[in-house]
Each structure stands twice: as structure tokens, then as C-alpha cells.
Length: 190
Image 1: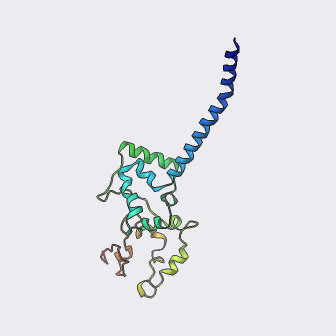
Image 2: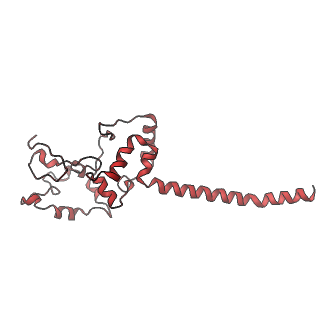
Image 3: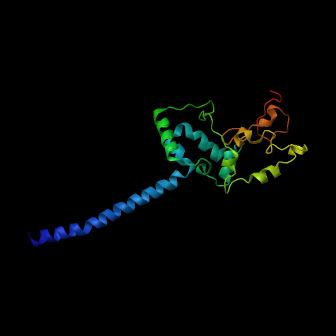
């Protein structure tokens, strides 16, 4: 083996750790960038335009939706919708296969999905005692409080509060209370 061949072999042996290091740094940087992007609302509709565009548009642009008030407070989607790997895989497979249905508004048709007190009152979110205090004697009616229902824990937050759709005065299924602006109300007694 000549001197130039030996020198070339030595340079090659010295370069591989640098190449491996550069590739490792690139992979870590790409992974970190993906993790940051994954946390943003735009991630969902960048991948799954149908049906996620509707949700992201509401998050950013529809001031009548509760989700938009969360956006104004810099609360991201994943702060409420905690990502679990098995759920994300199932959602990805459903999207890839087209195995999901949407309603007339373009929202995913789901059953059994609720936002309950445990979800809405976790650390850093809503303090339920403060919510109850703020809605005491609702609309000037002594003893009426939609957050201290005679139905107890049978009522989830999402019975009334529609994060991605119009909120609904569930109490008015039986009662006839004042309805917040922009909310829907069923006819009392139905």
C-alpha cells in the first residue's frame, strides 16, 4: 500500500465519526422540530385536511366558538386533547382508510366524547369552585346556578359548552333561563 493510499484510509477513518455526528445532529434537530410542530393546531390540518380544516379554522377565526377563546389565551389543542399514542395511531389509520364520518358542518361524528369536570378543571385550567361562584343566582334568579345542577355529576361540561360548535343551554330542556348571547336553546319542557 502506497503512502497516498494509507493517507486516504486514515482520512476515511477520521471522517466517519464526523459524518455520524452530523447525521445524528440532523436527526435530533428534525425530531425536535417535528415535536414543536406537532404541538401546534396547524399540524392536524396540515396532515388531515379533511376533517381537521374545520376545527383549525374555528380555533383561529370563529369568535363565537369556545375553542377560539382558548386560542386567544394561547391554549393549544393538545392541552385539552391529550395525545395518546394508541389514539393517534387509530386516528391516523381511520383517516388513511377514510373510515370516519362528518356532519353537515364538517365536524367528525363522534359518540361518547365529552369534556367533563376532570378534563376542564385540571391544573392550570378552570377552577370549578370559581366557576360555580361566578354563576350563582344566574341571570338574577335566586338559587339558580347552571354549574351547580340538581342533576349533580350527570352533567358534563360538554352538555352545554360546545368547544367546536355552538354552545347549548341544556338546562332549558326543562327550564326557561336566560341564554347567553350566541348560544342555542331548546324549547323548555321538551
